[in-house]
Amino acid sequence: MNCEDYQDLLSDFIDGLLTPEDHNSIAGHLSVCAVCTDANNDLGAIVGFCLEHRDEYEAVPNERALWLRISNMIEAELSGSAPSAIPENAGWWFRLMNQSWQLSFPQLAAATAAIIIVVTMFTVVSLRSFNFTGGGVSDVSTAGLALPSTGLSVKERFRQQQQVIDYWNERVELNKARWNPQMRETFDKNMGVIDAAVNDSMRQLTQNPHDEVSEEILNAALNDKVELLKEFAAL
Amino acid sequence: MNFYSPTTRNRVSLAAFPALFLVFVINTNAFAQQRVSRHYPAGKNVRIELKNLSGTITVETWARDEIRITATMEAPVVHFNPRQTDTGLVVDIVADNRDRREVGDVNFKIQVPPRSSVDLETRSGQISVSNIQGDLVRAHVWTSGDITLSGVNAARVFASNTTGNIFFDGEFASGGTYEFKSGQGTITLRLPANCGFRLVATAPAEKISMGPFLNGGLKTLGQGRRITGDVGDGRASVTVTNYQGNINFLRR
Image 1 (cartoon, chains in turn purple, brown):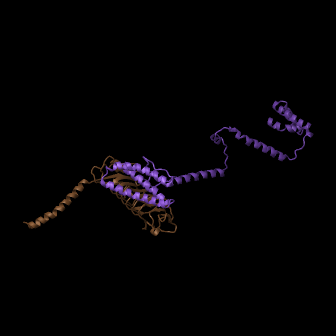
Image 2 (image 1 turned 90 degrees about the vertical axis):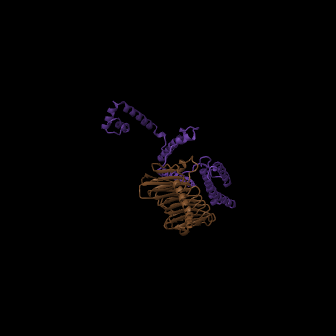
Image 3 (image 1 turned 180 degrees about the vertical axis):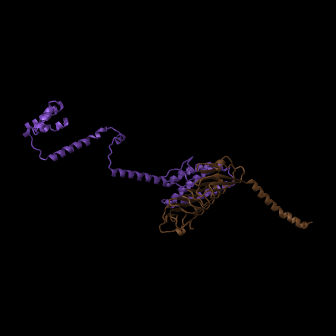
């Protein structure tokens, strides 16, 4: 037997419950082992103290209830002590990064699904905002002046787009003198078609300011006008 | 031996003069025009990008793995420098002749393998594409010019002009995107009876004719200026916009 085996038998040794052989064996070991002798002395002192004060304590009425209370108190202290690791004046990023995250598998799966849905919706919305202007399959070039963003009232957007159109119109007028009569006629004729669409949409919107179809046609026609001006401004 | 009287000879001379003048004019034009034809080796899935100033563009398919491009130029000194890329061929008459004032019409005839993609653009002039079955067919006329797409079976088709008709005779692939837009001309789509697509068609009131594709699932918005809804399985996305002209759907 080693020291661990001897120490397991110390309680019975002190109480005198061992067989004579085991008793002699432990006694022989204690005579040569200082560690086990110390353990025997400590345990003997505890047992002796308990025997001396046996009648001074009342029996615990419900040992299991007592243990549960103790267990709850220990857990409460452990959970209460965790946040104290983060300083009071720590920033949100420090708090976030030092936060302990424990997710169950369903929670993790739900979080992943939520992220996928949000990214998908964002992608779909981005693709739908792509506006077919006829100027190209890829993104429309916005060299020079950019088109005003959406989210404004129709009149304000029209006013801003008109500024962009005026800018490109000036550039076209500068170049127009160099064009041959045929090109000038073609340009004017086609610009007239787009202007007619713009005017028609504006008239419809005057009668019904909430007409979404007219608003979309107006935006598309104004975009087409800007693209046509930009194309011919380069000539 | 003289078979003609003096009077008759005078009449013959007078009659021959306009004919001689006509021959002279034709010969002058023939000398003024320049025709250039070039061949390029290509795989089965090539992409042609062409940006023209004015003139007609005709794209046809043939059963060869090569591209033939023929340009007929009004002005003999037009710069014409096709550039081969990893995926195909780029022809940019606009960039090649940026510093020139008068370029005139350049008429193109391009022959490509059927699985090619074509991206065509001109400031004015007609565009005609037939029997293309590649990924993309794009035809854009900035101002005036008809667009004819026949026998086209591509996943993405974009056709737009400001003045002129657009005619599409082909099929819509499931999941494909198809956009047609004109300022004033008539847009006609000729489709097989069993084709399915999700439609957004916009034109002035009562100028959209769904023909045999009219069904109860289509909704009318904006006092008849827009029709939306599914035809068949609704798997392809079709957007048709006409500011002033008609939109017609026909069955093959």
